[in-house]
Each structure stands twice: as C-alpha cells, then as structure tokens.
Image (cartoon, rainbow, N blue to C red; front, side, top):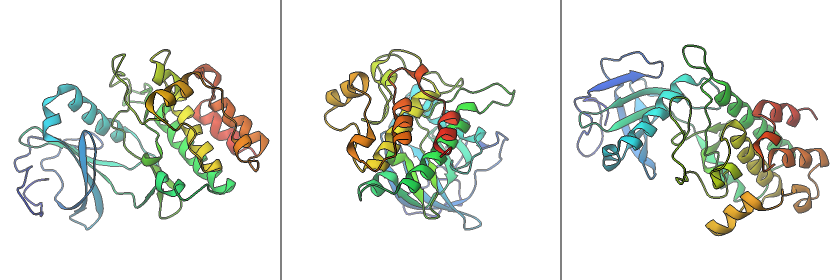
Length: 298
C-alpha cells in the first residue's frame, strides 16, 4: 500500500509511487513506510486502514477505491480533502501526514489516528449530561470556526465548509474530547460545491439550503447540523428521523424544534440558542464563533 516497506498480506498496490506530498505541501522522495493493519471501514469512495509508521506511531491510511479513481470528479474530491486537511491545524481535527497517488494512479491519504468511539455509538446509549453536551458542542463549534475561517498560503479565506457533520464523523476520544473527521465532501475556494441536483451528505444531518439546493451554502450550514447534534445530545432522540422524503420535508419546511419540549431539563437559554442555530434561513443563524461564545456564556 505505501512503498516497498509495507508489510501486509496480499500484493503491494503502491510499489512505484509516482507522486507524493506532505501535509505542508512539500515534495517527498518517498511516502512514509507503513505497516498496514486491519480495515477500519469501507465507504462509497474509499477504505480506511489502521497503519503504523516506522516509529510505531498509529496512523490511518485512506485509500480510494480503484474503480473510483477513473472518475476525475471523484479524484478531485478525494485530493481536495487532503489538500484542505493540510491547511488545517486544530486539536479536534486529525492532521494529514501524506498524500500521494500510487503507480496505478489511485490516491491515498495518511492521517493521524483518533482512538475513541463515534458520537452515534455514544448516543445509541442515551443522552449525555448538559455539561458534557455543552463541552462537546463548544469543541465542535471551535473546530468548525477554524475550518470556516482558515486561509490559504496567500492569506485569503478558503471559505471551507465541512458539509457532513454527522454523528458518525464526530469521534469521542478516549481522553474525553471530540474530533471531527471525514472531509470527503467538504468544499472550499479550492473545490466548488457539487452541481445542483447532486445531494451529498448524511440523511437527517443537512441544512435546509443543502436539502433544497436553494440559497448560499456556507459555514452557517455546518452550524445548523452542529445544533442538530447538540439537540440529540441533550434529548437522547433523533431530531430528523424517518424516510428520505419525510426527513427532507421536515428539515426544509417543518417548524423549528424545541429541545425543551422533549426534555424539560434543557435550560430555556440553551433551547433558545438551539432555535437560532436551527433557523431555516442561514442569515438568521449565528456563525460558529458566535454560537460557541453564546454556548459558553452561561
């Protein structure tokens, strides 16, 4: 998988690397030598593996499916993820260590490994305490603010949007903090949003403007979904559940929900903040920075 130093059952698919870059963008003569372990999961576009570098540090190897590598649009999405991660520097976002294509043109990423459980698995056991929900919500909003305001090498804001802040992409780490992963469908000035009519994301975790394809998609679209997660942490219930059509209609046209009506222990001020973040119109929502400040003001 990465160079001749790889040790794993089966053929070495990346022998003869044709291009490699570090997360900082500097050229490398060789990709890092990794010992690749078991699969962490298979997605629509890539498979991820546990890997260990020459110093024994655990990493994540993300390899694009070979059949996807024939589609230039999908390759552009995959490599944009690596390029964007290479510009981000936040404790809640795993660092990108290497990005390259193998000899057959299949793109790979090497990322820091995050040890923990998905927020979806945590919430399957019920709601969390208010203090925990506020702490995790603040950490998530801080990471989103970093993404939304990060600049390129020339100092221009990248205007990046994660676009898939689903509970499966939020990891509750073993140290109690959270990490945000999977920037596969993220957009920025380096990659335009998909054409209208193409809906990418996780059902129940999309902003109204994403569902309808109307209006501007920016950082406030991520804020909407962060509020969905905070609602679910506080209540222990899915906010938007059901079939695809039912969910999309609820997000686009349904009333702004109240967590306090579901869970009476939710403070009125927190319910009001959720209401602002869940507003149908993006311009009525706070930015990630503003939402975080309001969340921590009490």
